[in-house]
Length: 218
Ligand SMILES: [Zn+2]
Image 1 (spheres, helix red, strand yellow):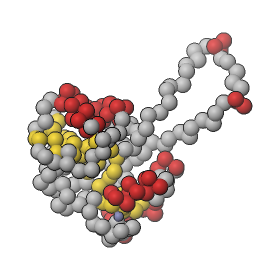
Image 2: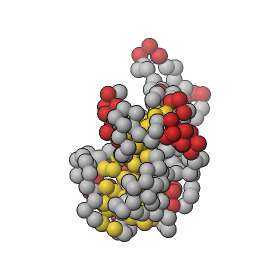
Image 3: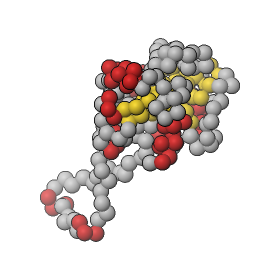
Image 4: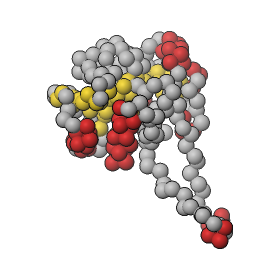
C-alpha cells in the first residue's frame, strides 16, 4: 500500500512516530507540527491521506489539499496532534505519487522552520525549459509542428479567513449538495487551475464525498 511507503518515508526523515493506533500513525515534528497519516479509512492502494495544520494566511495551499473548515469534534481524539486540535481548520492532503511524497517532505521541512512553504502540486509538471545562454544557441522553432503548450498554473493562495467565515455562514455549515455536516471542505466552483478565485461567490461548502465525486466528474 502506498500509505506504508508514506509512513516509512516520514519516519526516515523525521524519526519514529509519536503515536500509532489502528486509526492513525502520527508524528510531532518540532514542537508544534502534528503530521498524521490516516490508517483506518478508505485509503486506497495508491494513495495516502495525510493531515497537517493549516498553513499561515500568507502561504499558498498545496494543490493536493482538501481544506476543512473549523469543525468541532472531527479532529478531537483520533487526530489530536499539535495544530490539529478540536475545531481548528486543517489540511487533508491526498498523496498519490512519489513526486507528491517528495513535495510533502519538503513541505513539512519548510513548515518546521517557518520558511516559506514550497509549492506542492497535484501532478508532476514537465521538465524545466532548456536554457539558452548565448544567441548562437538559439534555434528557430517551427511552431506548426509543436504541441500546444500547457497553460501556466496560477499559484494558489490561501482562502482568507474572513472569506471562509462568510461562505460557512452562507451555506449554513453544511454541504450544499447533500446537506451533510461532516468532513466539510471549501470547494472552488470554478477550479483555481481554471482561473477561479478565492472569492465568496466562487466558493462553496462540500463534504468530502461530494467533493471527490465532483473531482471525478471533471
Ligand atoms: Zn455532500
